[in-house]
Every structure is written in structure tokens, then in C-alpha cells.
Length: 305
Image 1 (cartoon, rainbow, N blue to C red):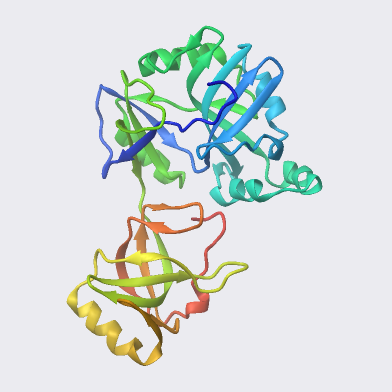
Image 2 (image 1 turned 60 degrees about the vertical axis):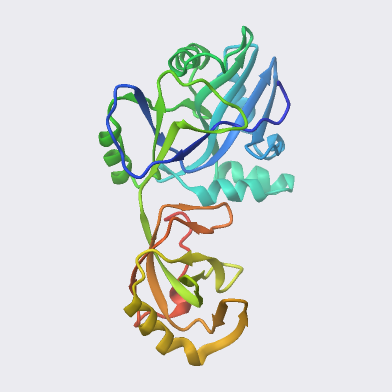
């Protein structure tokens, strides 16, 4: 188990926050899931896909000093904080670095830290079979918090209040966890629930599909123009289809199966609740067309999504 890639336990979706004595609630940190493995002075960081990224984060040396146990595996979120909140694009920037000089520069421009929320292993043995509250107790004893390694906030029976607080702080949302849940590696479990705030974004319309009717969405990035970032179907009515088809049919570029690609001339506003590491929007819902907005102005705003 130690110093081997592990697939961490994952939550399932939940549509709305709730209060329940059977759960604890934590903020959902907008970063990258990492497992920290420590034995003596050695510390390694692995992403949820099993990639070892230790050499990208010199801050891990300080994080290791915060772990009192000789041996430990901690489940954490790697974050880069800007303006008192984590910024997903900043931690992704850190993961893309390779040269020693750029990594050294990023220590000051994009400093990283880890938020610990679970413990899988200590010098006493493996702990995944223990209930969550017992693992939380072990985590309290294990950590000496520092700027590089902190313990997450955990509240009992206050899911609605924490959800409102994370909305005000422009965070992703919250995680609800059953107090007696065990830790299941390589699994997605309904014992853990993720509840996210909807966000809105203005996207260029790159095309459409007919069966069912969907709009193809695009955004402008620093290095890629009109990058495809997903589709939207929910919220679209028959009158929306008629309105958009009438205006973009003359802009056709090509057809691939049931997908009609067009010149990006019109825009729309959509809600989304999630996005991938490559900025693919998920759980989307159509809000409105934006006939006065230009496609080139539909930009991914780094650090504000």
C-alpha cells in the first residue's frame, strides 16, 4: 500500500444540500485530489490517477514536517490559494510544469498547499475499515497544521449552513459523508455525496445535434480559440431550436454524423455544476441566447470559474 498508486474513494452526485445527524459536512476544495505517502523523511504525492508528482512540489518537504507519525497515508486536496480561495487553474498550472527553474518560480507565484480530510494508514496499521469519525480522530492526533498542510473544516448536521457559506466564498460546494462510512479504495460510494453550486458562463455556439437537440459549446482560451467544451440540452425548448436553426443554418462548416458544425457567430449563457481537468463542462443547463455578444468575447476567465 505504501508508496504505491491508489485510487481514492469518490463521492456520488447529490442535487441539494441537507441537514442530517448521520453525516458530517466538509467544504469541497477546488483543487486536485492527492494521496500523500510518508515514511520517515520520505514523502511522495500521487494524483487520483496514480501519477507521482512529488518533484513538482518542493512544498512537500514542509508538509512532511506537519505529519507526526513515522508512517502515514493521507487523503488530501492539493490547492493553490489566491485571494483567500482555491483556484483550480493555478494548481493545474503547477502540474504542467517540468523545468526546475519554472517550479522554483512557481513557489512564489503559485504556492501550493494540501488540505487533509482522511487517513488510510499510520504506523499503527491500515485504517480504512474504521468508521469515518474514528479516522477523523486519528487525523487530529496526526497533524501539526502548517501553511503547507492543514486539516479540512468538518461540521456535523449543518449541510445547509455550510453550503450557503461556500456560496458566499465562491467555493465549489460541499461534501456530505456518513459518520460511520468506511474507506473504500477504487470505488465511488453513496456514503459520500458531492453537492455543487451552479455557475454560469457565456459560450460560443459551435454547432448543434438533432437527436436529441443539443448545442455544441465553445470558449476562447489563451492558446486555443473556439475550443469545444461540451454540450447543453436541458432547458432547451422547441422554440429555442427554431430560433437558433434559422440563424445559423447559413453558417454551416461541415457535418459529422448527426453533428452540424457552424462558424461561431452566436452565443448563449449556460449553467454548469462541474468541469473536467480539460475544462469540459458537465451538468449543463441552457439559460438564454445572447444575440448581442460576440463569440470572441466568450472567454474562460482563469481563476474566476
